Image (cartoon, rainbow over the protein chains, first blue to last red):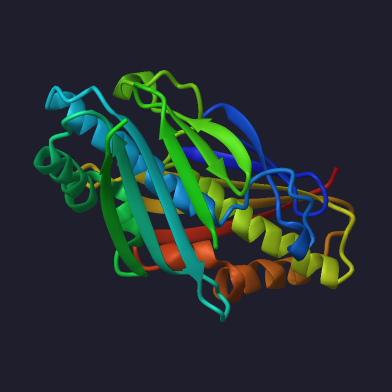
Length: 138
Length: 138
């Protein structure tokens, strides 16, 4: 069963064990933390780009498309009132390679966004979600 | 502006930079990964316990309640059909200390769950969310 455990270390710092991997999360100095690890709420962005990124490389692998580099980036902005959630999240998929097949790449991203990515599905309807695909030559 | 960037490393592995902290995420062997870091979808659990955990220690600090240990754990189960989301998430707040003030602790957890925790708010309505509070003597 998926689980995660966070043990308080004082201040806003927690030691996390997730999937048998240990890491630290912390608040920024602005909110009384010591920045000893990433912010928990922004882990939503990482969950999202990790989930869709793994989908996309898996789908492209099945299409025998392998010769590219991929960077996935998400950015957003919080609402001003509590509880502060993302008003919107923009995802950018940047592929670098020679002769990249745009229509297959678009298809892979759309399959992830529409069908496979559980994180997208958990956030859908809660905020504006948009994505861009960028193709670049090396 | 909050953001996160993931650079594909081959397989299902991505190097993440979030809040100027670097870490690796990866899939399990079962899904073709090498388990070199935590799963992205389970980061939803870590985002949730980190967000509410930081709320709770901050609220208790304002109530001058400081002499305790806290472990926050979340577990859930995925739906069977794509897109696989959490069907439910259970959160357990375990406090260890002498003479812990239950009603104030309950108040702090409820303030987080009902008012402050943006991650709870982003997931609300998408799945069953429940929480337990456990008080233990050292």
